[in-house]
Image 1 (spheres, rainbow, N blue to C red):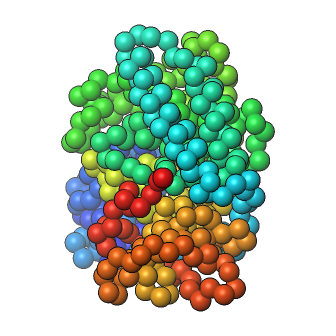
Image 2 (image 1 turned 60 degrees about the vertical axis):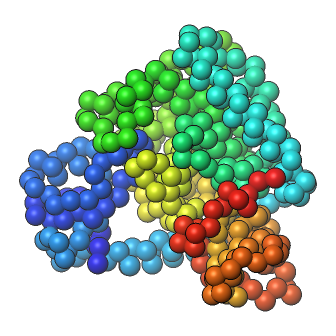
Length: 404
């Protein structure tokens, strides 16, 4: 059984089963292996890693190591607490179904605009700020009408389009997060634009580093980290860009314990929106399938955010992010008491544990069912969520069930 220990308890001849470092952006460190010497431990400490999971059956043990099952139970308790104490803010002007068509148009426009600007910057052209302002206005309007529509579209992922989809998804997540935080319209707008352009500096990273399928060397990782500096400088010299937009892009990889980059800022030096975008960025990254990383289901990702809060991520803001997403985020696959599997369509209006879901599959009979929409909060409903599940376990491709 895996066990969790502090990095300072790590010793040579221990077997690391998981570095627990997916909060470190762009890392593709070898996630497991035997610790050969103290120098390796020192290197892990220098990366900002605070704790790891070891496998005592393959190496040395620690007396007070915490079993993985206990960590999982603790994370579930924290998520349950969040569900009980954070009342969802779901005052929608229109239904998710009604908003979906408009959201689909905005989502497609966003992907097209980001694709074009990535090409433009590569060839030395200026960023068309006005186009991003118009798009951000549409995105903010959609989020304010009913955020579930764009949230659902954000779950449609293709592994080969990560840079494009991540930029658009992060803008959506920041809009949803800002809505829940009740930020004013202008702040919300600037945060969305900053999120959409946060990775623009990656066009200046050599392709052999940016698209390398294998492990990055220390020198290559240093080059990759420079994309934040490139983003910041590109935006700073772009006429019409607001200061907060630049800050959001410049601080999305900073961490409150100073382990982030490019400046190693600590909590008090990072703006509120910088802390927010860091949380949303980690969430979107760890839920996406990458060359070196299998994406986590949304609810599992929220538990990891809770595990990393207070050290790398701002704890209070992590709780607010969970409120904005719901403990079963839109697009999650859940198992019901009736042995049926369902996709979450909308967060529950009064209880995060009781969303609106679309039943699609019978787990015991292992067969697809005619789609059925169920509001779990209705008094007449006899069903309830047992747990969130991984679609891959059931061979379900969520992309086939999401969207318009």
